[in-house]
Image 1 (cartoon, one colour):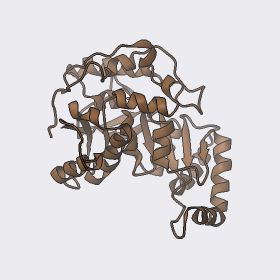
Image 2 (cartoon, helix red, strand yellow):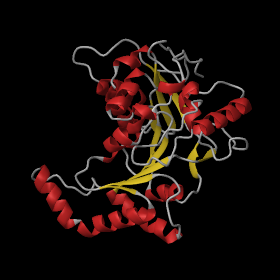
Image 3 (cartoon, helix red, strand yellow):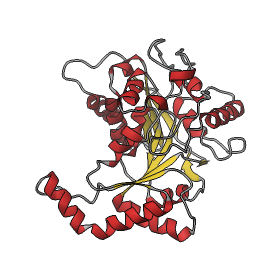
Image 4 (tube, rainbow, N blue to C red):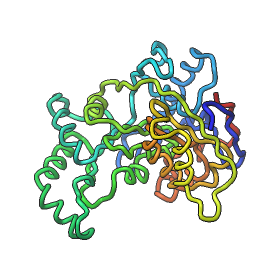
Length: 326
């Protein structure tokens, strides 16, 4: 465990993040939003501006976070001190917090949300008897809430996942997360998306409204904690053992105000969903979020979830080792 170290990359298995950012192909943000494209070119442009200003290499999380700065040329950047004004790519909301968030957005008077956004109806379903019975009960008890969210979502251009469609952080991983994304969600499990190489941060409803209204979102410039993984998972070990070990070292507040970056040759023995689990549980150490570097495991997961075309590197770049991480 170290705050800074060198990325250990494998030529055949790791793809250089700058090459992904530089990809020229226009790729839809999701299969549900064909008209919204991933703007890797803007990310790359912002990263180059910040890198020249700071005159040092950037870590993966810094590239993604600083790549989303509202004003990369003028923003003061000091880890743990200054507040960054950011432009996240998208918003995800669960049904409990989405109610007030949508009411606040409606009061703004704007006709549509400024960034792709989704509502996921999962939190209001109580586990009491069994899946089918609990789902039916939730629909009856919360009918007014679901109707409001569904109609408001339709009017203001927000995606709506009805009760029974799945858990918010898993739906995001399967459909909306991608390498380099900055996503904010009104759910503590939002960092789950770090398993696909994105910066996904849990927030309150008011933060979500700011982003949906096109207002820069403020985040205290995160510190960076690097976790180098060596060896491979074997026997009865699982990805959860990795985060439990990290939590034992850092304690429940050791990650506060920081993004945890995992790297090293051990990363490649962990599945994409395993990396997501580790990032998900990063909330237990107080981390802002966690992230893994893009590799062949993520590539396979994107392909298996029907999103092979959403990774521009498949058409435009070749794998090559990355630079030192500071």
